[in-house]
Image 1 (cartoon, one colour):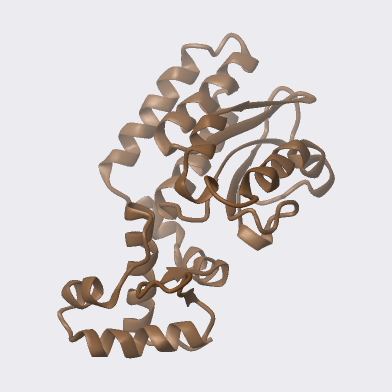
Image 2 (tube, helix red, strand yellow):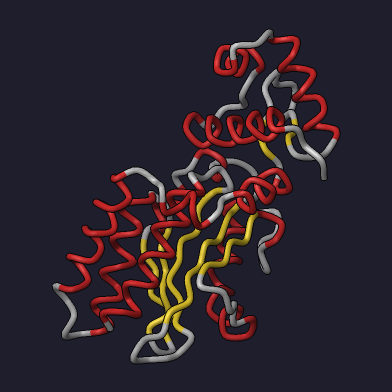
Length: 238
């Protein structure tokens, strides 16, 4: 798929603005951001829509990203970009590490503490495998998101949560960081949720997992970095 640098930047801006404000992003907002006319932005948005990267919900004049648009954006987030994130990430990582090391004598408590910290820092639901059980926290976070307040999303999310442990055992995602966006999810493909998982070695298993579940409307670079660093840190300290 061939995009110009400006089209990539506009797609990124739509994703980042939508993550912040949870309403479709219009051409006037983007025109101010890029210093060009609304007509120019509308033309570029039409191209992105033709490629299936953004869509207009209902009769809104604004646009929101599609799963395909999110995937293109996530694939463009490089390790170098993640390591250049603002100092806030370092502070957040240090906060997680402090909570984990306070419980270092008890691996199960340390992992739970890491999950609780991710919940607090990302506003998502957090989970981890501890031996043969799944620890989960932050369900109220998930169901307070605006996109999960309407339609059948609650049932689809519940199905995803019910099946996540057997799916992790069966699929055994093998990368240090795995991102499943919306329809890429193994269960609840139309739930509008994103699953970000880190694999790590623990005293319980070579394939322990920690991660978050949130809406596809997500600050991907920050959340991916936090989950990846937390998995690596748990592996190191445990």
